[in-house]
Amino acid sequence: MSLEALKEQAAIKAVSYIQSGMRVGLGTGSTAKYAILELARKLRDGELTNIVAVATSIDSERLARENGITVLDLDPTPLDIAIDGADEISPTLDLIKGLGAALLREKIVEIQAKEFIVIADHTKLVSHLGQKAPVPVEVVQFGIQSTLQRLSKFGEPKLREKNGELLITDNGNFIADLWFNHPNPTALERDLKGTLGVVDTGFFLGMAARAIVAHEDRVEEFSRA
Ligand SMILES: O=C[C@H](O)[C@H](O)[C@H](O)COP(=O)(O)O
Image (cartoon, rainbow, N blue to C red; front, side):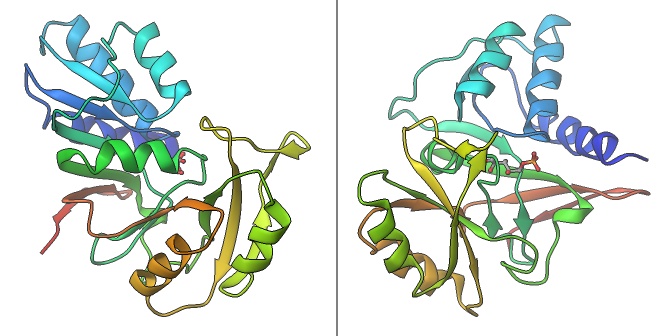
């Protein structure tokens, strides 16, 4: 089965947790896209009604609206559920996110969800964070070389590019992908957040309540202990 099919399977399972009347956080990326499309299908087919959503990126907001989902701005009311992909999922459901550059809005939305469900194909499972991916760090544009120098204390930061230009996030910032070799993501997250010029990081620690991961032969589901 293709990876795309696995992503779709995980997304469809996650959307089965959405009930009519819920406020839903919509993720960003190639896996979250399938959750948005499945939610839209259920609304169209009348399997769900009275759903409002908040999106974690301009792209996801556009996709949701184009498919008939009502998207509101985030306000302080809790969301019932948020569904999103991840770049790495540890055995304790800690995550690295942001290889799609949406980490800041994702964190702002998903922290407000009563239940955050992470969805993925099996290639995202790792034994420890940083095994396969750098942690994306959102940094302000001003003084970028100074911020990169401060970040180099923690690993090797590299400014992300897209189409030959520096990538600019939905929030007008840069992304520095930081390859790190640090045994304790909680301590690293604290240090990174305390670094001048850093807005936020792609560490999502203690946030996901449930993971739905599609393998070739089964869809595995596990909850935070
Ligand atoms: O910034 C992007 C997000 O954190 C994505 O959810 C993450 O990168 C996973 O994306 P994908 O499902 O495309 O692998």
